[in-house]
Amino acid sequence: MFGANHEKLWDIVGKRLKSEVPTKEAYQKTLEKINAFKSAFGTVMYYTDMDVVHRFENDFALYADNFAEWAEQAQGNAQFTVWTSLAENGIGANLQHYNPLIDDEVKEAFGIPDSWKLRAQMDFGSIEAPAGEKEFMSDEDRFKVLK
Image (cartoon, rainbow, N blue to C red; front, side, top):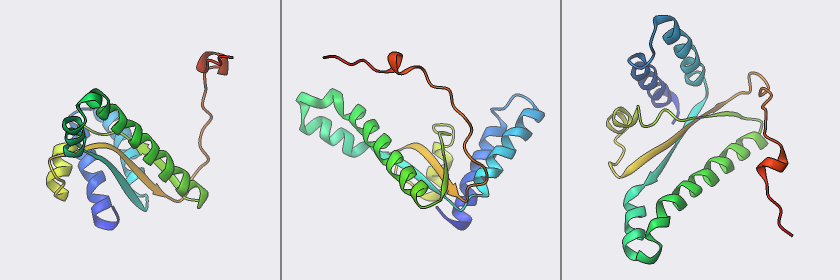
């Protein structure tokens, strides 16, 4: 999404969150965050077409229980690839998950098919500050190596 559509998306998010945030002060902080996303250059919207998932579930009954999970794995791959591509070109990005709170309003505003399930929103643009430090669990706890 670019231009007016990008801005409209983040206006929808801001308006929708007003009823979810408990205090005026908390909403102001939330709105500052949303306005930062809105000031980005654009937004990538990530969807899964559930009609396709259900078709595969029906066509390949032996593996039916796996298709929803495989669709989520495909989402992760797509999001990581786009983020990496943006980063390699000096473009910053934020991955957000305001779904399912915004699903209905976004579908209506942008004519999104009912079978599409919103999975994430990634705003992108200039890098305003370096990413903050993150804590990770130790590799010994995260990975298991079997020899």
